[in-house]
Image 1: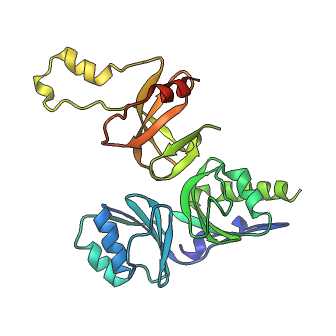
Image 2: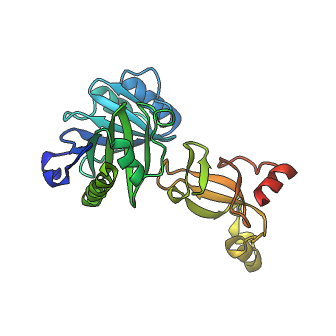
Image 3: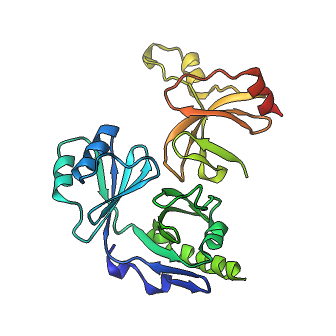
Length: 179
Length: 101
């Protein structure tokens, strides 16, 4: 995600809720069979593929298991480690860089849960959405990916064209939640 | 809100899903050997039961996978969801009664 793609106007700041646009890093969508994902995870230095809807960190990369056949990979600006690209050159798979497609925010604040609840019907409480869980779902009418990085921090990504829509939705929801 | 249990992601809101039509319809192995009527039967003719139906569903705003589900068309209650490729599961009379409730 290049810095120019993230406009500061997409930031949201309300009492008890802030959404800070993410800067830097690259994104990859890897689809493949079970063994392929397993092999890719090992090339990252992990012992196994993250379980469904779970995430795993490997160096400056994060592997997010969004679907049985799909890993979403967030990397630093350097991209994928060479061991991974070398391995993926030897097996059938689909690896697509989607850095320019995604924009995202770090969500924080004590009104975070109320704000998210206005956007998505998912139960974001700790018991059903623990730290490390990730999933794609709908936010208002925009398809997005939400990942709980910490007890009080979420990482939200949507396709770039949904950015202004989602930031204004979050702004309105945060205003309601602060009431 | 209607919840649908995705076999991969668990229970999710109905808005995340899209319906993919009737399930368990196999494409004929050799279409050239079929009569027009048989081919039309495969292409167009579908059951329209008042009661339980096996359908394909896709978790379109989630894991993006197709799966099969048995649903009661009168009440919209889902009896069971299962992965593509598995045979249609047996529905007990109790399950059917619950779905029709």
